[in-house]
Image (cartoon, rainbow, N blue to C red; front, side):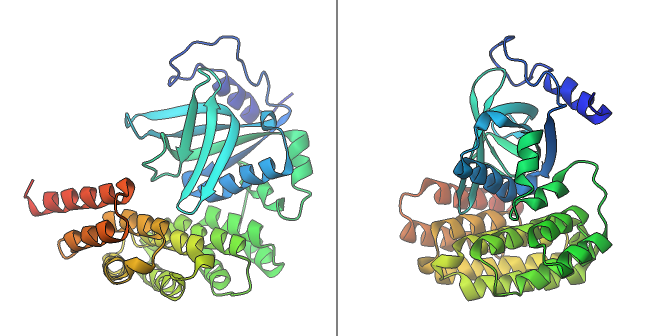
Length: 342
């Protein structure tokens, strides 16, 4: 028999999905979760789970051996939804980390982004990954996937465990625990990883994105917030022209918005830093770096930001790009609301 948690999950999975528009009583999945292992990710873990799905695809594992349950906001209706999907695939392309799946009740395809997603249908608060137990046991034997064990719900983690994983150089597992704990030791260890120049680009991407998970600690400690944005800013300044570091730079820019969110000093730095990056260096920037910078800057706007000049530079360097142009339009409208013009 399954555990109480498994029974609860089973009941939830077999409920009719409120987002479905078609009735399909022939689909009941799964009848029990006894043969499945549950992994739970946060909305900020989109890179990690997208890479997991991508690796499963590359290894040739059948997509009918795993499915997802997404809890989050429908970006079109603004309603909270919970959708179970199968046939899961992933798109990992710079600023885009998207899961694509089929609603098991309606059969309709839907896409999922992180907690701040606007392009995808669902902005995820959490993503549960249900994977055949036999497949899970096979995967965690692989050196690059042992970290999956630390995404199992209810697993007790501690700072002492994080230190042991760090000292043993179990990088992926240490990153997973650091994100889960969101503590001062998390900041310190991720910063040590961040300053290590020997990592592969793939590992550096995970490290840079992991800083998104430190919002709580930075909210309660202005010093760590400011030091972290300075470190992220230095990395961006040193690498924004390098094709090899496009993705790490994107994830650093994204993380700036999270670690500065509750500190006026940090937000002031981020506003100034990103404004200069966009206005003085746009001709050197990859489109997705501009996309990330505009999205992050939009969250910390004030009247000192020259949105008109940023928009002019976007039109000059990325003519006809609807996504970037729309972001500048949204920023301009938000700024006018601040000023009481609208």
